[in-house]
Figure 1: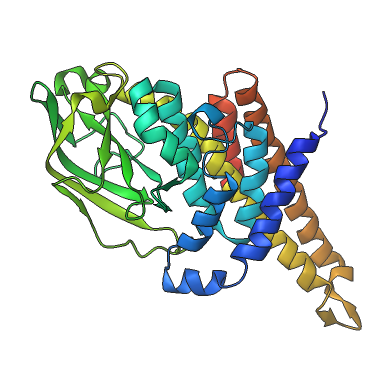
Figure 2 (figure 1 turned 180 degrees about the vertical axis):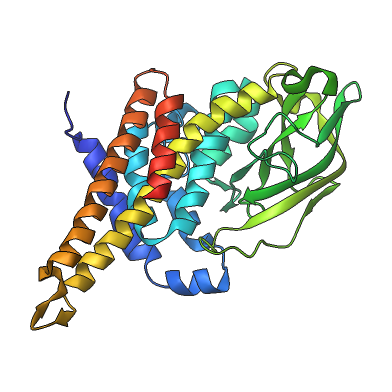
Amino acid sequence: MTFDLTEEQLMIQKAAKDFAINECLAGVIERDELQKFPKEQVTKLAELGFMGMMVSPEYGGSGLDAVSYVLAMEEISKIDASTSVCMSVNNSLVCYGLESFGTEAQKQQYLLPLAQGIKDGNLYIGAFLLSEPEAGSDATSQQTTAEDMGDYYLLNGVKNWITNGSSASVYLVMAQTDVSKSSKGINALIVEKHWQGVTVSAKENKLGIRGSDTHSIMFTDVKVPKENRVGADGFGFTFAMKTLAGGRIGIASQALGIASGAYELALKYSKQRKAFGKEISQHQAIQFKLADMATKINAARLLCLKAAWEKDNGVPYDLSSSMAKVFASET
Protein backbone atom coordinates (compact mmCIF):
# COMPACT_ATOMS: atom_id res chain seq x y z
CA MET A 1 0.00 0.00 0.00
CA THR A 2 1.31 3.41 -0.95
CA PHE A 3 -0.12 6.87 -0.40
CA ASP A 4 2.32 8.61 -2.73
CA LEU A 5 0.83 10.65 -5.55
CA THR A 6 2.31 10.38 -9.02
CA GLU A 7 4.07 13.30 -10.66
CA GLU A 8 1.07 13.78 -12.95
CA GLN A 9 -1.38 13.79 -10.03
CA LEU A 10 0.71 16.36 -8.18
CA MET A 11 0.80 18.48 -11.33
CA ILE A 12 -3.01 18.35 -11.64
CA GLN A 13 -3.40 19.21 -7.96
CA LYS A 14 -1.14 22.25 -8.33
CA ALA A 15 -2.87 23.36 -11.53
CA ALA A 16 -6.25 23.21 -9.78
CA LYS A 17 -4.93 25.09 -6.76
CA ASP A 18 -3.39 27.81 -8.94
CA PHE A 19 -6.63 28.11 -10.92
CA ALA A 20 -8.70 28.48 -7.76
CA ILE A 21 -6.43 31.18 -6.36
CA ASN A 22 -5.88 33.09 -9.60
CA GLU A 23 -9.29 32.75 -11.26
CA CYS A 24 -11.88 32.03 -8.55
CA LEU A 25 -10.82 33.84 -5.38
CA ALA A 26 -11.45 37.36 -6.64
CA GLY A 27 -15.18 37.99 -6.57
CA VAL A 28 -16.19 34.65 -5.09
CA ILE A 29 -18.07 36.24 -2.17
CA GLU A 30 -19.82 38.71 -4.47
CA ARG A 31 -20.85 35.95 -6.89
CA ASP A 32 -22.30 33.97 -4.01
CA GLU A 33 -24.21 36.95 -2.62
CA LEU A 34 -25.60 37.87 -6.05
CA GLN A 35 -26.23 34.21 -6.97
CA LYS A 36 -24.21 34.80 -10.13
CA PHE A 37 -23.28 31.75 -12.17
CA PRO A 38 -19.45 31.60 -12.56
CA LYS A 39 -19.53 31.41 -16.35
CA GLU A 40 -16.08 32.93 -16.81
CA GLN A 41 -14.51 30.51 -14.33
CA VAL A 42 -16.26 27.45 -15.78
CA THR A 43 -15.27 28.46 -19.31
CA LYS A 44 -11.63 28.70 -18.24
CA LEU A 45 -11.92 25.28 -16.58
CA ALA A 46 -13.09 23.93 -19.92
CA GLU A 47 -10.12 25.51 -21.67
CA LEU A 48 -7.82 23.78 -19.16
CA GLY A 49 -9.44 20.41 -19.86
CA PHE A 50 -11.10 20.11 -16.45
CA MET A 51 -14.68 19.63 -17.69
CA GLY A 52 -13.95 16.19 -19.10
CA MET A 53 -11.08 15.09 -16.91
CA MET A 54 -11.77 11.34 -16.95
CA VAL A 55 -13.10 11.13 -20.51
CA SER A 56 -10.90 9.43 -23.10
CA PRO A 57 -9.01 11.85 -25.39
CA GLU A 58 -10.80 10.07 -28.24
CA TYR A 59 -13.96 11.84 -27.09
CA GLY A 60 -12.46 15.21 -26.22
CA GLY A 61 -11.43 14.49 -22.64
CA SER A 62 -8.16 14.67 -20.72
CA GLY A 63 -7.93 10.93 -20.02
CA LEU A 64 -7.01 11.39 -16.36
CA ASP A 65 -7.73 9.09 -13.44
CA ALA A 66 -10.34 9.51 -10.70
CA VAL A 67 -7.67 10.26 -8.09
CA SER A 68 -6.58 13.32 -10.09
CA TYR A 69 -10.24 14.33 -10.30
CA VAL A 70 -10.60 14.16 -6.49
CA LEU A 71 -7.47 16.25 -6.01
CA ALA A 72 -8.70 18.91 -8.44
CA MET A 73 -12.19 18.98 -6.95
CA GLU A 74 -10.84 19.51 -3.43
CA GLU A 75 -8.55 22.38 -4.41
CA ILE A 76 -11.22 24.26 -6.36
CA SER A 77 -13.89 23.62 -3.71
CA LYS A 78 -11.67 25.14 -1.03
CA ILE A 79 -12.30 28.52 -2.64
CA ASP A 80 -15.32 28.26 -4.94
CA ALA A 81 -17.77 25.40 -4.45
CA SER A 82 -20.18 26.88 -6.99
CA THR A 83 -17.62 26.46 -9.74
CA SER A 84 -16.56 23.01 -8.57
CA VAL A 85 -20.11 21.59 -8.42
CA CYS A 86 -20.65 22.60 -12.04
CA MET A 87 -17.44 20.78 -12.90
CA SER A 88 -18.54 17.77 -10.83
CA VAL A 89 -21.91 17.29 -12.51
CA ASN A 90 -20.48 17.61 -16.01
CA ASN A 91 -17.60 15.23 -15.26
CA SER A 92 -18.90 12.45 -13.07
CA LEU A 93 -22.57 12.34 -14.05
CA VAL A 94 -23.06 13.58 -17.60
CA CYS A 95 -19.77 12.71 -19.30
CA TYR A 96 -19.29 9.49 -17.36
CA GLY A 97 -22.82 8.33 -18.13
CA LEU A 98 -22.50 9.00 -21.84
CA GLU A 99 -19.04 7.50 -22.21
CA SER A 100 -19.99 4.37 -20.26
CA PHE A 101 -23.41 3.67 -21.76
CA GLY A 102 -23.96 5.89 -24.80
CA THR A 103 -23.87 4.82 -28.44
CA GLU A 104 -21.02 5.86 -30.70
CA ALA A 105 -23.31 8.38 -32.38
CA GLN A 106 -24.30 9.86 -29.00
CA LYS A 107 -20.66 10.12 -28.01
CA GLN A 108 -19.75 11.93 -31.20
CA GLN A 109 -22.71 14.31 -31.08
CA TYR A 110 -22.90 15.03 -27.35
CA LEU A 111 -20.01 13.60 -25.32
CA LEU A 112 -17.23 15.14 -27.38
CA PRO A 113 -18.34 18.78 -26.96
CA LEU A 114 -19.44 18.15 -23.36
CA ALA A 115 -16.00 16.81 -22.44
CA GLN A 116 -14.41 19.84 -24.07
CA GLY A 117 -16.93 22.12 -22.38
CA ILE A 118 -17.01 24.33 -25.45
CA LYS A 119 -19.02 24.19 -28.68
CA ASP A 120 -18.92 26.81 -31.42
CA GLY A 121 -17.01 29.09 -29.07
CA ASN A 122 -19.64 28.94 -26.33
CA LEU A 123 -19.81 27.17 -22.97
CA TYR A 124 -21.36 23.72 -23.49
CA ILE A 125 -22.12 21.64 -20.40
CA GLY A 126 -24.71 19.13 -19.21
CA ALA A 127 -27.10 18.43 -16.35
CA PHE A 128 -28.46 15.25 -14.76
CA LEU A 129 -32.24 15.20 -14.23
CA LEU A 130 -33.44 12.57 -11.77
CA SER A 131 -35.02 14.28 -8.72
CA GLU A 132 -38.72 15.20 -8.76
CA PRO A 133 -41.22 16.68 -6.28
CA GLU A 134 -42.24 13.13 -5.29
CA ALA A 135 -39.11 11.22 -6.26
CA GLY A 136 -35.86 12.20 -4.58
CA SER A 137 -34.05 9.36 -2.88
CA ASP A 138 -36.93 7.10 -3.97
CA ALA A 139 -35.80 7.23 -7.57
CA THR A 140 -38.15 4.43 -8.66
CA SER A 141 -41.19 6.67 -8.16
CA GLN A 142 -40.66 8.74 -11.30
CA GLN A 143 -43.70 10.80 -12.30
CA THR A 144 -42.09 12.23 -15.43
CA THR A 145 -43.31 10.14 -18.36
CA ALA A 146 -41.85 9.28 -21.75
CA GLU A 147 -44.68 7.86 -23.82
CA ASP A 148 -43.51 5.60 -26.63
CA MET A 149 -44.85 7.10 -29.86
CA GLY A 150 -43.05 4.80 -32.28
CA ASP A 151 -40.00 6.65 -33.55
CA TYR A 152 -39.91 9.12 -30.65
CA TYR A 153 -40.86 9.56 -26.98
CA LEU A 154 -43.31 12.20 -25.80
CA LEU A 155 -41.80 13.63 -22.62
CA ASN A 156 -43.92 15.27 -19.90
CA GLY A 157 -43.14 16.13 -16.28
CA VAL A 158 -41.07 18.20 -13.86
CA LYS A 159 -37.58 17.75 -12.44
CA ASN A 160 -36.36 19.56 -9.31
CA TRP A 161 -33.05 20.74 -7.82
CA ILE A 162 -31.18 20.51 -11.10
CA THR A 163 -27.58 21.73 -10.93
CA ASN A 164 -26.55 23.54 -14.13
CA GLY A 165 -30.28 23.88 -14.82
CA SER A 166 -30.09 27.05 -16.90
CA SER A 167 -26.44 26.95 -17.99
CA ALA A 168 -26.56 23.43 -19.44
CA SER A 169 -27.21 22.83 -23.11
CA VAL A 170 -27.90 19.10 -22.70
CA TYR A 171 -30.01 17.24 -20.14
CA LEU A 172 -29.86 13.56 -19.20
CA VAL A 173 -33.47 12.90 -18.18
CA MET A 174 -34.88 9.85 -16.36
CA ALA A 175 -38.52 9.20 -17.27
CA GLN A 176 -41.08 6.43 -16.82
CA THR A 177 -42.14 4.69 -20.03
CA ASP A 178 -43.97 1.71 -18.51
CA VAL A 179 -45.38 2.22 -15.00
CA SER A 180 -46.29 -1.48 -14.69
CA LYS A 181 -42.58 -2.38 -14.79
CA SER A 182 -41.60 0.02 -11.98
CA SER A 183 -37.83 0.62 -12.11
CA LYS A 184 -37.48 -1.54 -15.23
CA GLY A 185 -39.83 0.80 -17.07
CA ILE A 186 -37.58 3.86 -16.70
CA ASN A 187 -35.54 5.21 -19.60
CA ALA A 188 -32.65 7.67 -19.77
CA LEU A 189 -33.07 10.26 -22.53
CA ILE A 190 -30.80 12.93 -23.98
CA VAL A 191 -32.75 16.19 -24.27
CA GLU A 192 -31.50 19.51 -25.62
CA LYS A 193 -32.53 22.58 -23.67
CA HIS A 194 -33.59 24.57 -26.71
CA TRP A 195 -36.17 22.00 -27.85
CA GLN A 196 -39.81 23.04 -27.96
CA GLY A 197 -41.64 22.25 -24.73
CA VAL A 198 -38.62 22.59 -22.41
CA THR A 199 -39.04 25.29 -19.75
CA VAL A 200 -36.49 26.37 -17.14
CA SER A 201 -38.01 27.75 -13.92
CA ALA A 202 -36.74 30.59 -11.76
CA LYS A 203 -33.47 29.98 -9.90
CA GLU A 204 -33.74 28.37 -6.47
CA ASN A 205 -32.75 30.61 -3.55
CA LYS A 206 -30.34 28.36 -1.65
CA LEU A 207 -28.53 28.80 1.66
CA GLY A 208 -25.13 28.02 0.18
CA ILE A 209 -23.27 27.34 -3.09
CA ARG A 210 -25.47 30.11 -4.45
CA GLY A 211 -23.46 30.77 -7.60
CA SER A 212 -24.48 27.36 -8.88
CA ASP A 213 -27.66 27.63 -10.96
CA THR A 214 -30.23 25.27 -9.45
CA HIS A 215 -33.60 25.13 -11.19
CA SER A 216 -36.71 23.07 -11.83
CA ILE A 217 -37.06 21.93 -15.44
CA MET A 218 -40.50 21.35 -16.99
CA PHE A 219 -41.28 19.24 -20.04
CA THR A 220 -44.50 19.66 -22.00
CA ASP A 221 -44.99 17.29 -24.94
CA VAL A 222 -41.29 17.30 -25.78
CA LYS A 223 -40.50 15.02 -28.71
CA VAL A 224 -37.34 13.01 -28.00
CA PRO A 225 -35.98 10.89 -30.89
CA LYS A 226 -35.58 7.19 -30.11
CA GLU A 227 -31.88 7.46 -30.97
CA ASN A 228 -31.51 9.75 -27.93
CA ARG A 229 -32.31 6.96 -25.49
CA VAL A 230 -29.21 5.89 -23.55
CA GLY A 231 -28.96 2.12 -23.29
CA ALA A 232 -31.63 -0.49 -23.91
CA ASP A 233 -35.32 0.04 -23.24
CA GLY A 234 -35.89 0.06 -19.46
CA PHE A 235 -32.20 0.66 -18.64
CA GLY A 236 -32.79 4.14 -17.19
CA PHE A 237 -32.88 3.24 -13.49
CA THR A 238 -29.75 1.10 -13.73
CA PHE A 239 -28.10 3.90 -15.70
CA ALA A 240 -28.94 6.40 -12.96
CA MET A 241 -27.69 4.19 -10.12
CA LYS A 242 -24.41 3.31 -11.84
CA THR A 243 -23.81 6.92 -12.78
CA LEU A 244 -24.64 8.26 -9.33
CA ALA A 245 -22.00 6.00 -7.76
CA GLY A 246 -19.34 8.00 -9.57
CA GLY A 247 -21.18 11.24 -8.90
CA ARG A 248 -20.86 10.66 -5.17
CA ILE A 249 -17.09 10.79 -5.49
CA GLY A 250 -17.36 14.27 -6.96
CA ILE A 251 -19.78 15.55 -4.32
CA ALA A 252 -17.71 13.97 -1.53
CA SER A 253 -14.62 15.73 -2.88
CA GLN A 254 -16.53 19.01 -3.02
CA ALA A 255 -17.58 18.64 0.63
CA LEU A 256 -13.99 17.75 1.51
CA GLY A 257 -12.77 20.91 -0.18
CA ILE A 258 -15.31 23.10 1.60
CA ALA A 259 -14.25 21.64 4.96
CA SER A 260 -10.56 21.92 4.12
CA GLY A 261 -10.93 25.53 3.04
CA ALA A 262 -12.80 26.37 6.25
CA TYR A 263 -10.08 24.71 8.31
CA GLU A 264 -7.31 26.66 6.58
CA LEU A 265 -9.14 29.94 7.24
CA ALA A 266 -9.75 28.98 10.87
CA LEU A 267 -6.10 28.05 11.38
CA LYS A 268 -4.95 31.29 9.78
CA TYR A 269 -7.28 33.36 11.97
CA SER A 270 -6.19 31.51 15.11
CA LYS A 271 -2.63 32.66 14.47
CA GLN A 272 -3.70 36.29 13.97
CA ARG A 273 -6.17 36.75 16.83
CA LYS A 274 -4.65 37.33 20.24
CA ALA A 275 -6.23 36.86 23.65
CA PHE A 276 -4.67 36.89 27.11
CA GLY A 277 -1.29 37.84 25.70
CA LYS A 278 -0.89 35.20 23.00
CA GLU A 279 -2.33 33.89 19.77
CA ILE A 280 -5.53 31.95 20.36
CA SER A 281 -3.91 29.03 18.50
CA GLN A 282 -1.75 28.65 21.61
CA HIS A 283 -4.78 28.06 23.82
CA GLN A 284 -5.56 24.40 24.40
CA ALA A 285 -9.31 24.84 23.92
CA ILE A 286 -8.72 26.14 20.38
CA GLN A 287 -6.09 23.50 19.70
CA PHE A 288 -8.62 20.78 20.54
CA LYS A 289 -11.04 22.18 17.96
CA LEU A 290 -8.40 22.53 15.27
CA ALA A 291 -7.13 19.01 15.93
CA ASP A 292 -10.63 17.56 15.60
CA MET A 293 -11.15 19.45 12.34
CA ALA A 294 -7.85 18.27 10.87
CA THR A 295 -8.52 14.66 11.87
CA LYS A 296 -11.97 14.54 10.30
CA ILE A 297 -10.78 16.25 7.13
CA ASN A 298 -7.91 13.81 6.71
CA ALA A 299 -10.27 10.87 7.25
CA ALA A 300 -12.68 12.29 4.67
CA ARG A 301 -9.82 12.73 2.20
CA LEU A 302 -8.75 9.12 2.62
CA LEU A 303 -12.31 7.92 2.00
CA CYS A 304 -12.53 10.01 -1.17
CA LEU A 305 -9.18 8.77 -2.46
CA LYS A 306 -10.05 5.15 -1.65
CA ALA A 307 -13.27 5.38 -3.64
CA ALA A 308 -11.39 7.01 -6.52
CA TRP A 309 -8.66 4.35 -6.40
CA GLU A 310 -11.28 1.60 -6.53
CA LYS A 311 -12.92 3.26 -9.54
CA ASP A 312 -9.58 3.54 -11.32
CA ASN A 313 -8.75 -0.11 -10.65
CA GLY A 314 -12.07 -1.63 -11.64
CA VAL A 315 -13.06 -2.49 -8.07
CA PRO A 316 -16.75 -2.02 -7.09
CA TYR A 317 -16.89 1.39 -5.44
CA ASP A 318 -20.58 1.96 -4.71
CA LEU A 319 -20.12 1.46 -0.96
CA SER A 320 -16.90 3.45 -0.72
CA SER A 321 -18.30 6.41 -2.65
CA SER A 322 -21.41 6.45 -0.45
CA MET A 323 -19.30 6.36 2.72
CA ALA A 324 -17.08 9.13 1.39
CA LYS A 325 -20.05 11.31 0.53
CA VAL A 326 -21.86 10.97 3.86
CA PHE A 327 -18.71 11.37 5.97
CA ALA A 328 -17.26 14.30 4.01
CA SER A 329 -20.60 16.11 3.91
CA GLU A 330 -20.88 15.86 7.69
CA THR A 331 -17.28 16.96 8.34
